[in-house]
Length: 289
Image 1 (cartoon, rainbow, N blue to C red):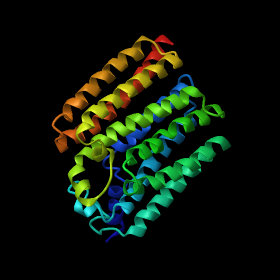
Image 2 (image 1 turned 30 degrees about the vertical axis):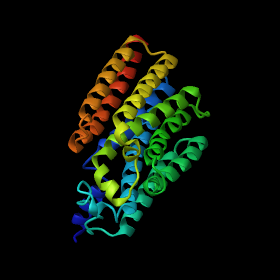
Image 3 (image 1 turned 45 degrees about the vertical axis):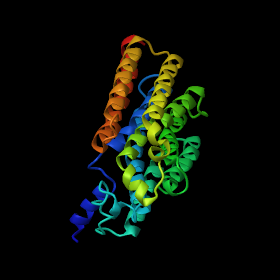
């Protein structure tokens, strides 16, 4: 394999050709930065976190494929991945994870000691998540913690202080949101996961999946509302939350028949939800603040 072809396989390994995962991790990070800075965060902090999100999500994909290298060949959606098809070796996926994580950590070194300490936890969360589906039925919660950990990190980077209560409220809200959309994702592969013996909230919730994800979405909406109240956002942000509610109803409509392609669309639709929240925050601050 030529160097160019191998590089292309690495790009597919870390799913740069499918950036929705980057967006889902990026939006809560930007929410936190905007609230922590009470507006536009310092440019260098913004760039560090945008690059860091991209690197860590990519690293997470690499270690996930390493963990699932014996599972992915048996799942329709994942059997074409480079590691599943043997186009790259397991050690290469681990090496990619280590290199990308190291680059992300170098970026964190440009912040402050408190953020560096929080970043060490982030690396552990990212490295351990892919193996949780073999240990318990709530791997989506572990992923939620990993994704939401960027929220307190954003606050420490901006303020150089331990995250305040609003940061932890946003952390819990982001965690819950992640469980919702990753359950939609799990519903896509539920039949395969049942056959293989992999665990997920989609399997745990069973026939109550629509009800439970709906309840969790209500909690996410209420959490975003409380965050807005504590951050001092006004009418524009509330208008954004109306759109958020509409998107949540649409996602429930998509998963109603539990058809895999529709469940995957519901998962992807959360990218738009996160963007709407950010636009609401920014517009409210700039126009009403």
